[in-house]
Amino acid sequence: MRLLLMSDTHLPTRAKRLPDALLADVDTADVVVHAGDWTDEATLDLLESRARHLVGVYGNNDGPGLRQRLPEVARGEWGGLRFGVVHETGAAAGREQRCAHRFPDLDVLVFGHSHIPWDTIAPGGLRLLNPGSPTDRRRQPYCTYMTLTVSGGALHDLTLHRLPPRS
Image 1 (tube, helix red, strand yellow):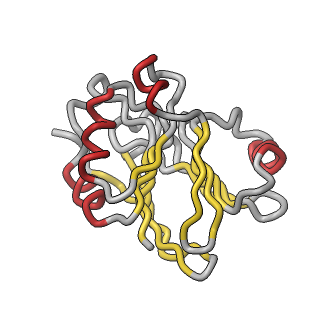
Image 2: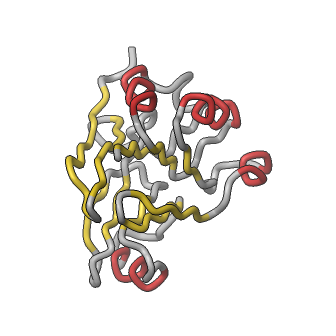
């Protein structure tokens, strides 16, 4: 099972549209995960129309319309692993311990907010993944998103995709 992870798209303020490379991967993914800060419902509509299965949450910059359509925390089980999705996890210092305490029933937690790619393992084995942002690199050298495969209760082929600068 192939998953695509993204967060913090901030359309149309940070970019006018999602990158073509990202959309091509959306079309081939079994599950698309968006960890919040969409900022517009049109992006949600687009991904709902293209993704085989979409899982999303709202972020701190998402207004009432998105908050009515999306949960604060989402959960799913794919390839034998229990996933959770949330936008904010707090400061980087102590993140692993906080998340392990808050989500003891998960194997993988996908989060956003910082726009900084993250891949760590918390005490007890919780894997924490932040795909960064495909449209707003902030202090990072690249805009990013992640893909991975899941089978037999394990993650495989985790790839952080670096997108070319927008022209």
